[in-house]
Image (cartoon, rainbow, N blue to C red):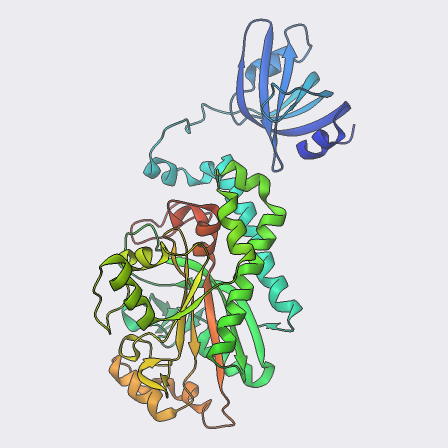
Length: 428
């Protein structure tokens, strides 16, 4: 027989089927053996009796053994996924040692055995949702006429502050792993105008929180002629589109993760507010009794308090210029603030998007670099962009893992990527 996926077999619903996969669970007696098989699409219960010629192989089919099964499928509401296969033939393809992952094991043990924990229904579901998210990003931008543009990974300069750079030996010299594509994207928009990319990003942040990774993926965009009010609306449209795509394609995975679908429905349908940093401080003071002085960056606790008043993402603009990166220009109408924004997710997930209009002033950029302890001459190529037909332009970056964590309702961002890299973990 031709093999089919478990999902295809269940759609068939009755008759002869042939599937293959791995033992997810198994139990039985001297007369019957119940084996739940998993593949990349679903799980299904299979029943084999002791008179079957394949009984000996079935007895050897421990957790994670790989098997091929032929038999008769029928609907059975008592089975885990509503269907059951009565086995006519079971072929043991790959035996399995005693599988080390069982119930109620600690996060560090699971992290040490990540190469095996990937097989769990939880991580499999997350990876499928991540697949939808990255596919949605490509679809969103390509349908809007953006061109995919790939940046270098080795860079000679910092983009987001020198303290979080990963230094790499580059033949007889040293370079750094990229913190963002932004500087190179700004060069490309003078040729391509509207561009986007999804690429790995590296930040040597000495942080051990559940919201930080040392290696993560950033989905970034940059566009010529675009100012802050327009770029924030693009960001809103993108995130809403991503949520809609996940709702359309991954309801089964969201159910496996126990995600509250109603919360995501609000993010998929409602309008996202835009407020200023100053309005955030006012809300924190009036509604939460928190007196945050102007000029202070918002901490996790302050973001969580503020976002407790919303059920959708919120765009926050005009953070204090003094605490912003060198390329974020001051707002002419309020010079204490920068033409920048973050998007905060509800339910305590914090910043998922960060962006700004870009400064077009060489002098302002030089002054900003010097304040950050950088030498402007090391950025001569970047400053050149302002000398040859500069135009207003803007861009932002979406933290892919942060969006995955929020949509999936994860406790820790480390589960949003297949093999997490942090300050304390570089294996497996």
